[in-house]
Length: 114
Length: 135
Length: 110
Image 1 (cartoon, each protein chain N blue to C red):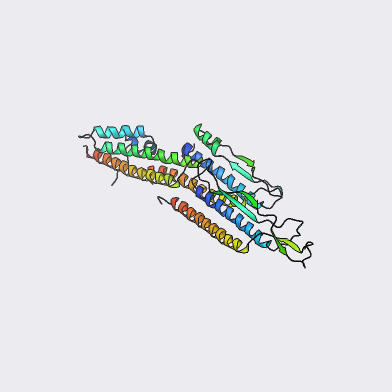
Image 2 (image 1 turned 45 degrees about the vertical axis):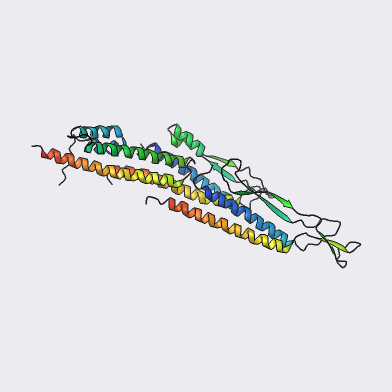
């Protein structure tokens, strides 16, 4: 039994997605000079939206696909500027989600009188 | 998908475009003294064509490099009969690139790049402050 | 000086009661009907519980919108969350007052 209910499960699933995306950004940045390397992109928001609507947010699925961005002569298509900006956004999004989870538990705690 | 932190992507797009422009200008300046025989084209000035992004979706998305363009391949004809590439009349081809122009563009590009860095930092700080509301 | 809460007591004491408005509202309405005038303490508790429920839903809705990438403004969520938190704290204070008043009343009967 999850005390926080489906709401915290939904936010927890989002954190799982953001975590995977952060790792993809890191992997892409590490491979910016690797010949024939295609950048990886993680998506989960659509799946999460459907999972929340179905009432089972923990069934959210993660998809990783290869970027269709144009390649440079060495076959690599990592856009360093986009990956770095992506990491910054990811950090802020992660913080927002952890705040939201803490707020949810905080409301429950307050109703317990603490 | 825009997301609540979209200003960072927009500023990032600006940094990318102006960095690309600076690279093109550096290329022009590095090749400004290339000499070619009149039987071959001169070094062509690199231009970066920027375009607003997101105009189709209606949602502002910053800027992007639409394409690169190249200047006059004919360059300028310079009379230099002692040069190994000189033709029968003593002419060689040099690039049609003006150094003053390039330096002016460099200053513009650098300033624009800096402005986008400032936008990025300011937006990031605003977002971080917003995440502290209610604390 | 606070006596232990008797087991035959208001359902609003139960934390679940706070997030289950109908149960808490029945208790509040019961408290309200025992007042001489309409709009007494019971209705204060009742409307406070409504506030919490509404604001909590708004905060949760905004948080889930952010989770799926539909939130345009961070401050929208942060303000909704702060409002929900404060509404919760206010209602808990009101509830605690109600419990304490109930105990005082119970002790008054000979």
